[in-house]
Length: 157
Image 1 (cartoon, helix red, strand yellow):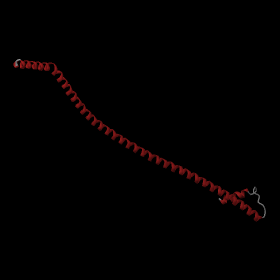
Image 2: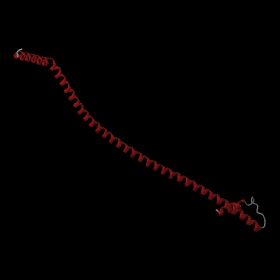
Image 3: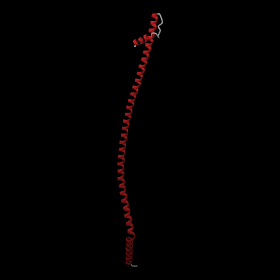
Image 4: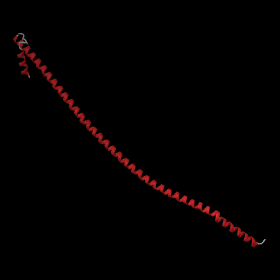
């Protein structure tokens, strides 16, 4: 065997192998590598978009939380205002009711005083009649002296 023939045949086999690899093996490998690069780039872009959307969502949630706190403060303020209005209305109603009770009590007291004065006048008239009858030593007829009793009652008033 000749070493030149072996070298040439190995060079020819190697050239055929390179041509076959470049023609049939290399394009699918490059295509797979490019697809993998594209997938990685898309993943990185999606990650960046996700990070950006997360920041936006965080800002929106903080704004919504701030608005909710503001609305809660307004509701509390309105509730406190309404509570003070209810207290004031209750005080006013209580004062009015107290005034009515006091007026009723005063009217009742006035009526009792008037009744007591009337009873006292009646008793004074009876005492005056009893006293007059004892002085005169005779019985005074109440029917006959009705005008006299009315005059005495008027004088006592």
